[in-house]
Image 1 (cartoon, rainbow, N blue to C red):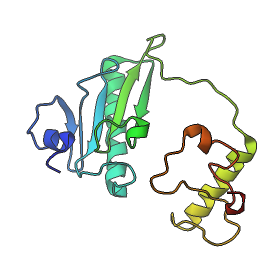
Image 2 (cartoon, rainbow, N blue to C red):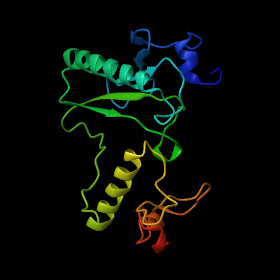
Image 3 (cartoon, rainbow, N blue to C red):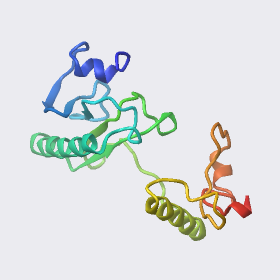
Image 4 (cartoon, rainbow, N blue to C red):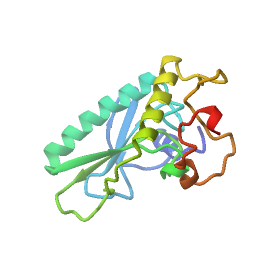
Length: 178
């Protein structure tokens, strides 16, 4: 894709510090690193998000991520490593080409990336799990409009807030309760 910065980087049109490449993937240093050694792994084939990528490209990317992570561990001896992958603007994806961030971490590095553990509503957790199981049994097709569905999705263009989604109506409520 000609307007994708990662495709242009892959094709040598933009300079980068490449650390690994093979027939399906490319790994390079992040130009805005969260920590020393922060790098990115991309599939060579353009796909905007995880939802769009081919399974073989994702498999190759995770294999490359492991290879690069092991090299990071050997080279920098971090105390840990975050692997982050975001999809869409709401998840803070900044480049629309599926990619994995490999971020070396050290104890007390002050970088954060934690959130408070707040117990969820057991009923909503159970409903969400039932919804996902139903979809996965049907290869991702929505299990309704049949009656008794446990799944609820916002309609296209839905602009409700996160709080509204977490209300008693969602994220997975029966159609009858909507």
